[in-house]
Image (spheres, rainbow, N blue to C red):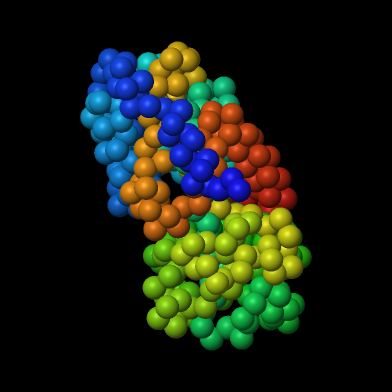
Length: 320
């Protein structure tokens, strides 16, 4: 039977260390994180950068260029020299969603980037305040038909906002969106009972769920999370097809030569196939992509852009 580990091992075999090291990059490699230091994207990028540098035989430096939902860092990479030495550690926002949120966005993720490979997805979890009398997604939907309920997010247009907008669309609910300036304030108000629910990443929610101050109702990806393996997905609980997660992937400037792109892809695939790397990523809630190819990332970007553009339009989502 083909398993995720088999696929990853095959990817590693396609990228022998000798091939990766044979053609070192011409200048220091920069892995651009389009968000502030200290968050989950930054943490994962720094762990990958160390191993990627070893695979390439060259130091990989992480550079944070935060702002505009990831657009500042993304634009920097799109305009960088196309030699494979400046890489964007991109997420759903700058690679797929932001084009629908920012009408004047200065770059196009399809036109201005060459995909290297996807990394995977991190799901959100639908969590409610412990005093909310709902223990399943269907009970929450029924409760919403009787009471006015609200969900908090880390800001207008954030993945936590879009997850709630998609839920409203698919479940026919009218949960009110309350935007906050960050995940922390939203969680504080959830625990205090000022809002009923949040859609937030599994690791952020976990200590509050384990401490009994919040209750997890469902995982927002199509498959369950290894972090909360006994928790059903939202899709399993009457909303088939519900999928609201953050994907991660590597891209470079569009005109980067094919040999440079392949060198990066081979090194990246070899790094992700390492058992220590997989264990770290899975401990962060990452659902590792089964296929680490440019074509897989291209398809993922197109799929996510189409899905979220419809949600943004129908829910009239606007950024701060």
